[in-house]
Length: 277
Image (cartoon, rainbow, N blue to C red):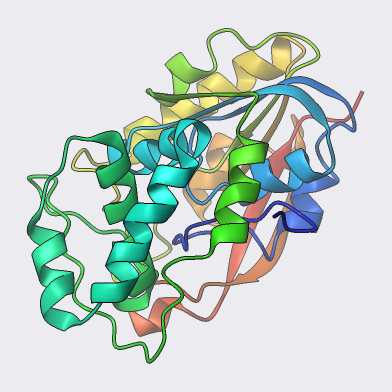
């Protein structure tokens, strides 16, 4: 049982389905190791896996719940499917809040909980408070698709040659070398105070982290690693990624997952990349 292509298994704020063609054309046709240190919903990874464009992949994020999903799908997909079947059978508002309050340590239970909350929580958000506690309210969907077995098994196939870890973005790319490629999709710089939304982890991702990311991008580029980065089109982003150094485009994208309705319309995004060699 398998989809015609590999697709993301999670809804994710800032997902890259709309920008996929523009991102994919900036990445090499043949990649040694593909690195994605802010993996999120993994749209770029799954598209590259479908096209068989890399030999192996390193996927990472600092969101431990997210990484648990990918680890479980790689090693225990059938168990995840069984656990999701239970969630689907019992789904209702009270059950949602019962599951939300849980904090399972078992890999399969944790992964299934994450997928269930993602499919049934308000607007597909992943949001935590300062203590790292998931706090998204119940989403009022008529028939949420909690268990999508073909998609989950396809993800299992895509993840077979992937290393999956919780790591800081610089640590995750430490072994990247010439012939490899990196896609960087950090929590975006806010275009306004109201639009700021980066609560995917209890540690904030502020301007100092974006400056550190810009230094990593430059180091990768100088080392012959092909790098692509996306971010919001702000003055800070333009300052950090000077146009004369890299290929630089501003493209429109629509945000459908956002805690603020005003942030769900068209926005300008920057794509920065090293020239294809």
